[in-house]
Length: 86
Image (cartoon, rainbow, N blue to C red; front, side, top):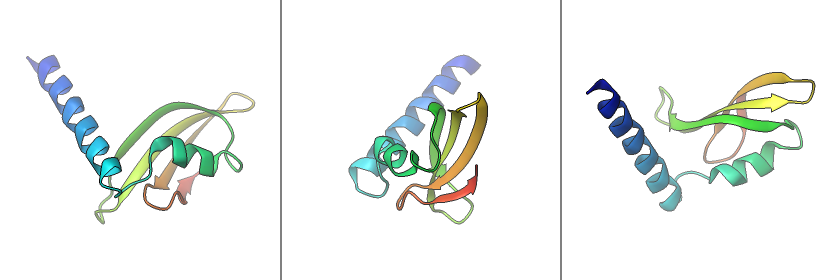
């Protein structure tokens, strides 16, 4: 039962993220990755879209950078500006 609830929660998160991108509230993940790739090269390991405490959409990204370093970034989902991490 707990596993089913977790899957439903993930589905709702996915739907909410898709709706936000479709409504133009946030940039698609591909656009975010293009914007940050010059300053933060690497392979995307994980990405989550949600709202921060102030209600702004943010992407939480985990990248595998050159030299096998893991970088965690918080990126404004509307502008593509890196808010923290590196």
